[in-house]
Structures are given as C-alpha cells and as structure tokens.
Image (spheres, rainbow, N blue to C red):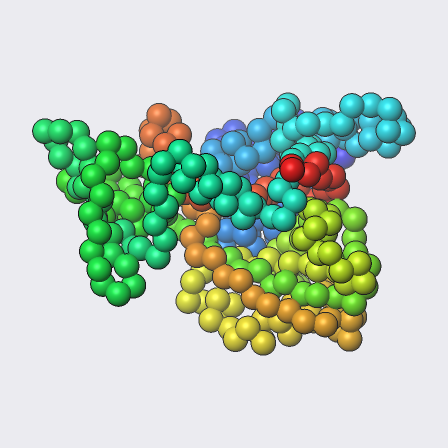
Length: 331
C-alpha cells in the first residue's frame, strides 16, 4: 500500500509505456509482482517498450481500490450477491458462456448455418490475391488449393481473419497504409497439453504464472471449461501455454522436448509430479497476437488505431494474476 500511495502522490507525468501506466495505477511493487514478468513472457519485450495505450485499453476500468472491494464482496457475501458479469470491469469477470466441447463448436455452427442458408464453405485453399475493381466496387479473390488448382471468387464484400501484415501484401491496388501494416509485430504461441493421472490440479479455468524461473506463461484446466472436454474422471488435462516467436528456440523445439519441459515446469510449480504425466501433445499457432510497441503506436492517429486490432481472437489479459472463474456451458 505504501508503494501505491507513493505513486498516487507522485505519478509519472508523461505516460508513454505500459510500465508507467500500470505503476501509476497500482504502484511499483504490485507492477513487479503481478504485471511485469507475465506481460514480458506474453509479448517478448520489456514493459517499457509496450505502449501505454494498450494498457489503458486492456485494463480499462480496473483500479486497486476496485479490485480490493470486489475481493471483499466475494469473501463476505457467502454467495448471496449477484456474480460479476464483467460488463463494468472485464478483468473481474466471474462467469461466462463457453461451448461444451471447446471453441471449435462455434466454427462448426458457423459452417452449418452458412451451408443451410445456401452458402459454400471451401477448405484447403490459400488466398493469393484480392483485387478491387474500382468501376464495379466488387472484389476478385484468387485462391489456390494444395494441388495447384486455381479458384476465382467474385464478391461484393470480403472479411478476413488473416494477420494484417500477411493480408496487406495480397490486396490490389495496394493500400496507402501498407507501410504501417508491415511494421506490425506478431507474437506466436504454443500449447503443451498434458494428461495427468489425478483429479483436477486446481479448480480455476486458468492460472497465470509470474515466476521468471519458468518459461510457461499460463496454465489452463480444460475440465473447468467444460466437463465434456475431459470425460475420463480419473484423468486431468492441463494446457501449458508458451509464448514465443516462430523460428525461435521454443518454437523449433522437438515435441518430445517440449513435453519434457512442460512436465518439469509443472513439477517445479508444485502442481504434479513427473510420474503422474501419462501423455502429452503440442499445438502451435502462428500470429495470434499483434503487439503494440511505443514506436508503432506513435505512427497511428486515434481513429486509425481502432481499425488495427489483433487479427484473431485473443484470450489473454496481462491484468489478471490468478483469477478464479466459473463456466456457464452453452448448449
């Protein structure tokens, strides 16, 4: 509390970085405990290189006083109060809807509805070019399948979930903002899923790992998301998330070595002994997160910034330490 009071009395006046913004809001001590290490694991850069604008957007509405008050209400109300739905402060969210068998159900439902309404879903094609006809205002999308067969699609509208840096080079005529798009940086990550001969290792959906002695950034408990994701009651399944850059040491590590690393770090954290691990697998995902450095942020006007967000859905929040949440299953 002394650190918090100090920075409230004498805050950073020129707030440009994530570190300065969080220190002003929570004090230097809490920044070092709950924000610094995890944030640097996620983004792969120092907190004084991350834009303050990102912090203000992701930790919007959260204050130390609000967090303490929320914790007190949870502890003293003994279940009689209405649970926090996250509408006021998303970081304090306690419950939310989640697909019974994981997020893939959403994409399956989207596919089924598209087909039911007369649409066509084409898989296994790589988009090569998106060309806008100024006269008609329509797009011609060129795609190619694994066998090299070309497909042309004429469309009035194109919606893309591709990383902006990859997309902009395929758009013709080339956008004026191509320089800004190419300057964007992305962070990759991989998940090591471990099957554990035990009951659930912890009751939370996930826990955030701040310890700098381990590389893992967050651990998910898949059965807490939905019991149907881990139907074998004698086994637990956790996912250890590692943030990296495609091509670096973690990304290129052999799957067996990654499973060994995850097993060792799980043991170091006191969650499970190595002999309890029955099996594991590795899933890699490229460019799920776009980072905002102070250099990149300085090139954007406020109106432009709202259009250049993470190009794929993200679930991380650097504001949370070890938040307990409950899951409402969508059927």
